Image: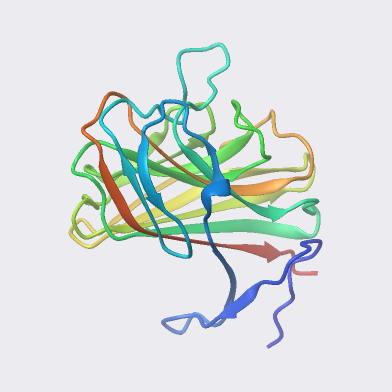
Amino acid sequence: MAYEQPKDFGYAQTTAPGGGGGGGSLWTDVTLSGGSLVQDPAGIISGSSYGATSSVTFGVGDPGNIRGPTGPSYVPDCPVWEWPVAAPFSFTDNAQVLVQLKITGTPNDAYLLYLGVYDGTLSIDQGLYGSIGVTTGATGVERIGRTPANGNAAASIVANGGSVNFACNVDADFSRCRDVLVRTDSATGPAYGQQVGAKNPTAWTGTTLKGFLAIGATASKGGGTFPGIQLRYAVIPTYA
């Protein structure tokens, strides 16, 4: 059975074998670099090692979060890393976008990992994300600039790590991504968390599509290292 490449991308994707009888799927691995870091307003990052597998260390303090300080702008004020997906991206020829994060461990403090897509501008309602609370497993979805709406929780991913698996639809009528489904996995029980939300980032503009990873918290934390970060994404074309 032939698999059609997503259209209007301007890069080559690699084919990875599917597992558990699921068939083949197209994934692009993300290699982070120093230039991938979009912002760190609080200067919370005290060390980093970038590549296909990355590691980041935070110092003591409040790193900020994806909602940002109290309005009116609600611009995220936490560390954010991005990578290009397509510019221009075709909102008519593609149907869904998938992004996955794997991590081997986190600090034993109430940090949040955010994973998603946006139009390249970090401002309210210009992107979507799925999230996990690393100590509670709380699994949420929302638009950039807003606090996550949580559903079922996975377990802590502090010691053994886990993953965040994000999916959203491509809205051809309004040229934006919308509607989020996220599943989180942990090495201990409850092993899986999930949440779904009809989220519509109405401020999305232009035809640039980027993926992003952000790490934040809602108050000052004790610092620590986020090791073994791996990222990948796929774009599912319309069946035409």
